[in-house]
Length: 343
Ligand code: NAD
Ligand code: TYD
Image (cartoon, rainbow, N blue to C red; front, side, top):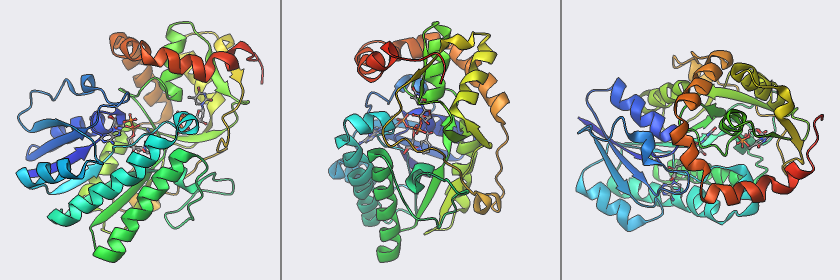
């Protein structure tokens, strides 16, 4: 049996990935190490928690001693690192944990992998490290040009991975993905925020005029891509995982309202995010050459996502209570008070 350590497996993509792996591979054991920050949620893993091939450890990837204890207890074939602070807006108001986890946490995982001779290390990264794609899609050799403390932290993690490959021949593979969406995404992010606000007839805050563009990737498609990179990705290489075409934020939000049969006057144009990247776009031909392509287009993926949030109100209502209320008020209170109905 093959054993992988998934870090950050209680978050959005990590929990989808663990569910995907345990379904797709009978001969796989998964150890999940997660700090359970506000974004980590063991409710995401209810479907696998009694699977004998799954074990959960509560802890920080930056804790080297914990990593050593964990890996020396049972040898690990591969590490897939999802653990990160991930929300751009939070990185703007408080960058500290972003650097701690997204840079130093990666360093600590790379050191532990090196010490124990782990055979593969997959670093989950983002299109945001390339900065805005104003002139065309970014390839894996495009320069890094991050705009936010989040993307700078992720870029730092990527550079350490590159250095460990060059210096120590650590078998590191990096994937850089477009914006993911789907079940179990925290309601701080654009799509779940708009779906859940619309379900509660609350305003949908759109930054600026909503003309910024993102590529959207249904989370099942990214899990299949990461699984492929885990088995077939070449050490030292980077693979972009693109989404389904360019889409403005306003178009996406209007599609959500259409799915929910809610009126467009729920849209509230609010002050823009500082340093807001206008467009991300990825050339993912290198990954496609390995045999992957996305299977869920944005319309179908949004219907699935909206239905999941409609069916799982208890899951997200719990997340929108408590600390999230204070975050939301600080982030949106003043902006919504002076929001406009048209851009
Ligand atoms: P998320 O915020 O939903 O989950 C992050 C998880 O990491 C949480 O479970 C959290 O508890 C855990 N974590 C945070 N700090 C930790 C630490 N120090 N030690 C151990 N665990 C820690 O994130 P996500 O959206 O699932 O993103 C997963 C990865 O994919 C991240 O590395 C992110 O940068 C990358 N990524 C995400 C997207 C996206 O659209 N969501 C796109 C491209 C890349
Ligand atoms: P987000 O989901 O935060 O992902 P990222 O910043 O990593 O791309 O945001 C997606 C896009 O939606 C981004 O252009 C910012 C915008 N956005 C809004 O317009 N309003 C919001 O309330 C949020 C959270 C994001």
